Structures are given as structure tokens and as C-alpha cells.
Image (cartoon, rainbow, N blue to C red):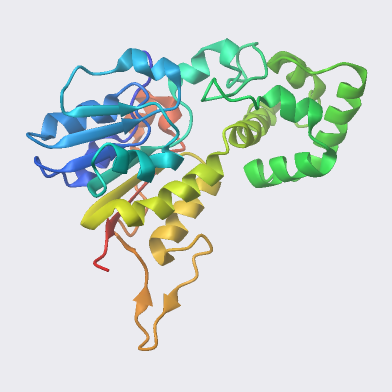
Length: 301
């Protein structure tokens, strides 16, 4: 399990759930099962419902009668909770982003370090791959992908290079894409630049921003009053969405007030300041460097 993925901000996120031993909790990003394992340690007669759309995650399943595993995207959380007899829950945990396993298996196409197919699907039953985006999206669609998913300032040049290259030969692998984009930035910034390009493609392939919006909207419906929402994000786009939603109940971060001047919002932040890994955790796990943890409590309606 530890070689599959090292759970980030593990102690902080589990504390943030404020677990009731008899309660019902949801881990929407099961992965290697690290967070789920710690939740189960604190449960007695309670239940844990774990989601993961990646078939590889099933190899990490824990043998525990209190665990219900759902192999679907968490954007469908509300329906699956209802079907499984858990319409209301006490806590939801989301560790967003890509697992170490997905990064380290070159053929999955997530990593800039290894050669592999331009895939990037978390749900391997999906038909949309990074290769489809790179080779078949028109320039307007590509502009949206790289603006929304990475906020790249030189996206027009990036898109032109992709279009020119694919007119000659279809771009099928991560190494071919890296070659197309070579020379676009200073050598000292190549890794960061490629990471943002790959991030944008991955977000589009997996509809990550739409899934996160659906999760946050559904969280207010399924969490009991006093229930906790715990979210770990890894880039500013996701963190901004989470921060705004916790603050205001919408993704623009605009506070809505009733006739009496009371703020209408479904959540109250538990941590006013974002929680980040300490130096020791970053030293042990470099992928924790960009992690940001936010915790909120469901308010009474």
C-alpha cells in the first residue's frame, strides 16, 4: 500500500473529520486506502463508504465489513450513498489529484518523467484520452483547456506548436508531446512548464473541475448538521473553488445575505488559514509540497 501512494496530511485530515465511532463517513478518493484505513481505526459500529473510479485501486481494498466500496467517480456520490442506504453522513474526505501509483506507471500517461501513451484517464473505461484532446480538439477548445486547467500565459504559442505538429503526424506519446513543446521555456523552468501542460490535459480528460463542483454541491445535501467536509487540493484552481464554496456556498466567493443581513451559506470554515504540510512531511514525500487542506462544518439549515 505504501508503495502505491503515501497519504498526504494524513493526521491533520483525520483529525479534521472529528470522527464519531458510530458515524458514517465517505472517502471519495480511496486510492491506496491510506485515509480509509485510518478512518476505520476510529470507527466502532460506524460505516465507511469509499469511492474510486480507477480499477487499479481495487487491489488495495481492505477486508472490513464496515467498508462499502463504490467504483465510480465521486461526482455521483449522492446517488450512490442513497442506493447503499446512507442518505446522510457525518463526514466527507477528498484527497484530490493523482496518486503516486498513477504518476509512476508510465503507460498511464500522467507523468512527464516516463514515456507512455497520451492517456491520463483515471477511469480507464472512458473514451476521452489526452491523445484525443491534443490531436482532435480545435484551437478554441485547446485554448479553453490550457487557460482553465493551467492558466498558461503562452498558450497561443503552445497551441500553434501542437497544431503544426499534428498536421504532420499524430502525437501519440508523452515523449512526442514533450518534443513538440521543447524550447518553449527557459531550461530551468521546463519541468514546471510541462507539469502545468500535463495538468491541464489531465483535468480535461477526467473532467476534474466539474466533478469537484458536483462533489461540493452534493456535500451540503448529504452532510448532517455539524458534519465535516475535509478537502486536500494540489493546485490553485481547485483550492480557490474549495475556499470560495466554504466561504459563500458558491464558486465565485460572493456572500449572499437574507433580508435581515444574515449570510446564507451551507458551511463554516474550521481552519481560517489553509493547512499545509510541514518540512518533515515534504522531505519524506516531495509530492506533498503543493498540498492544501481545508476543513468546514455543515451548518444547521
